[in-house]
Image (tube, rainbow, N blue to C red):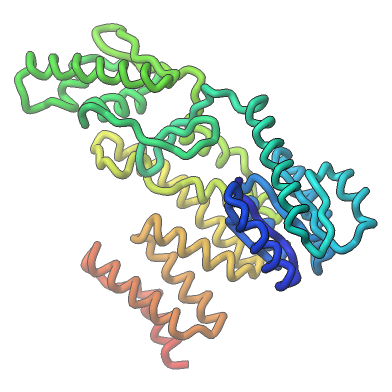
Length: 373
């Protein structure tokens, strides 16, 4: 069970962490003294449970709990405090448990037992065993029932490519002649047709054996891929972008989740020429949203969030020159000369390696003026 701990007192945070780490069923994925930082990480990491102090500066634990309940109603909350009088307020917020400090090992064990039982019961009633999501950013993977994404073990590379080509054309009839020209252009047509039939058979067997609700239907001298009860990450992501609206303090976490969902270009790991147009289209949408999110952090003076954002953008799209420039300007505001120089060096290396050119005149002028300060 993935768990986050929030307590503004260092000793209490350390003690709670020590006690929980003794329990093998728990995985501590974050420990935070700042409730605002904790909230951002809860939105990103989506833990199963949060152990939460009540009295904290800036934001009370009950206020943070209300945010969690509103956004993630299935997340378990355990309040930890020295004040017994907060018990009624805590349980009105539907907390799983209420633990008094100082923490006793046997009391924590009892709490964890309740959490594990509740999670198991919730899984039985709310997570359909057949629920599957298809992931296409970076590489093809499937996710079932919220478990770790997994890859399919294809018999041949061509079976995988044929499946993904038909997926990109999902809902449309694709003639066999087009498939032969696209995937087997350099071999005898009779032999190519045999390979097409073999690949189609392998696809059907694979998705049937894996219980994936997708069908390859024979139509009009060709095939049509039909999606059943399966979620498509790409479609959900694009719909999310359209619905997200203007970035504000109230929906910035939603925008950040959309930004983080994009872990690489559409089917990028395969390098299929036929998927390049769709890859570029989706990348443009992501980059437009990324620029807006970066501008929001900068205009809101959230420099730490902006740094994390631009480093992430840089790791996904290292050829995006502006991410280096924005980081240079942020580090300048923080008086971090080493990091400014480092970003300029990284930019120079990237441009020389990928485009055999120098940074733009604007960046060079800014950097030269900065060096003279």
